[in-house]
Image 1 (cartoon, rainbow, N blue to C red):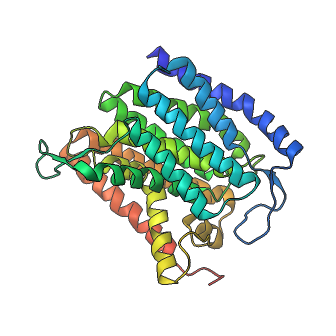
Image 2 (image 1 turned 30 degrees about the horizontal axis):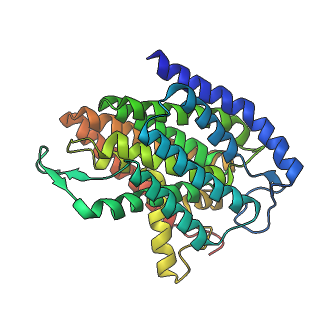
Length: 341
């Protein structure tokens, strides 16, 4: 157990030390986010390559406490390098949505090649009945990885939001991995939590640095891999539901963003101010309060996962009540008319 604690601490300290260096580097090379439109919530230029801090902290802890000779660890590092490079180029120079999507597909294919695969589902009606998905394994795995990668990226709209939400999700997935005896995945989760917590003091409002696409894409990419290994591959009836609940907030927000853009006939890859965090600000909340509200929703979803894993009847009922309540809140926020509509 000490190994996991030290891995967490290593990632946290590394992130806390590296982040000020990245802030200085960003100012030196001009890697600043300058507010130009209404989607921006800040009023002055802020360094935007903070994702490098998260990646380097994650890599340092991983290299010390994990088996670098492992095929899956190598694949995760290789895929992450592709994702981080893509995000960094986008933060510095700008990339078109098709190019970013192509690079995400390549990175997801790397993960699949090195063993991160959704290969079966457990029949929810018959807990011991395994449903093999065969040739659908590749497209479903890639869809999951690319989907989660982009949901986190879309959540990165307020100071500290993406870092906090992914921290809560990673803590939840840590519990899932521990419950299913997947200790290598537990290690990955705790390292990710540590890297986030070391970065968050610099990223919380008022932010001294943004993670940018470099960080948001990286966090989503690693979370998607952790979810596959920690829950989806476990032969239990609730394994299909757990990662969806743990990542429920960004998944819900992205799903509604897609439907909203389809209904308004806007390009799916075009940004807007209809996300949950934008709506909360439009309703009169300041950035900190809006972020804390979303933290609370994500935390309650995490608690729901913990209750559901215990598989007691009372816990299941309580879980379903929490989920129904939490689903209602984002629906209300999403469909409430804002002043700019």
